[in-house]
Length: 128
Image (cartoon, rainbow, N blue to C red; front, side, top):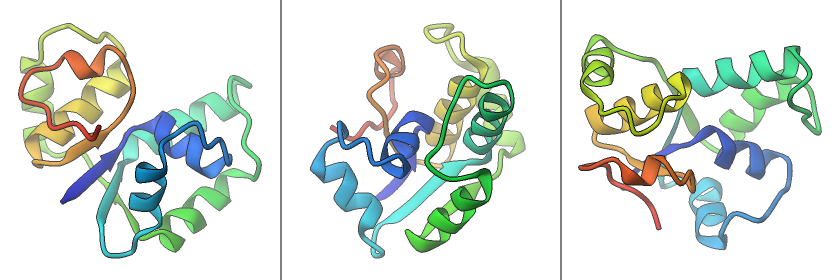
């Protein structure tokens, strides 16, 4: 299975907040699972760090080290992702989350999230 980590799931993991399930932790730790994080998540984290809305145990450089350590690839948005973005119903209005949803749909990835709005999108594969 191929997974896309939602921003908050990745943040919980790197900050040691194990309110995420053991199954999710196992997926992230498993080098055999194909895992992605959107570059949009990196951008969102950077913005929130910069304006003081987010704190990390380590600095921004550590994110890249953790991604590499856990075999998580960074997914760049494509033209198809933006076309899908444009067609999404306005269930969720956060532009970062909408692009993550679009990337999951376009790239046939299972999205790991617990966002109450995201789970309402039709045709989206979600990890439970």
